[in-house]
Image (tube, rainbow, N blue to C red; front, side):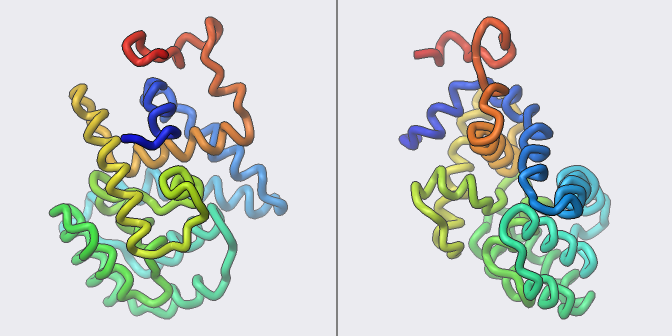
Length: 228
């Protein structure tokens, strides 16, 4: 892990950083120009991070539905740049194809075959590597992270072009961080690591006081062995 930003983040107790995610998503939502977009992002994010994961895991054969694909697309676009055409393409998929493709993609991802899982997901109309990563992040969160703009720039050190090669590079780095954290008998997933890094980047730009580590914020004091 030679990435300086990742090294800096690891100096923080990851659990405490992860707990700041609600503050980060609120900051992101309130940066929207339209109040409607702010409300929709907060609503969809709660659904994506909490409800959808539980719904998928409760199914005999894990999959997403056509309606869920459309909402995943809306969530992704609200997190980044709004492109209505992608929603129309997502809506043009048949219910049968979404269930079939997503169930096969989840099976591949859960076996650690992330490349094949992304390629399978992109068989759906309107789904590129970034949207595929969003689907996999909720269906196979252990091995798959979401291709978030802010996280991509941390690992790529430049603006992403949203290629499969870039995603695999980023996800491999996140898995390295996950494995490092899990040496302490933790149960981190790739998706939770990605959310934690995203939280750090967002709050660094919008509300850095929440990241202040001093005597008033003992919960964010790094363990002595990690302090420099």
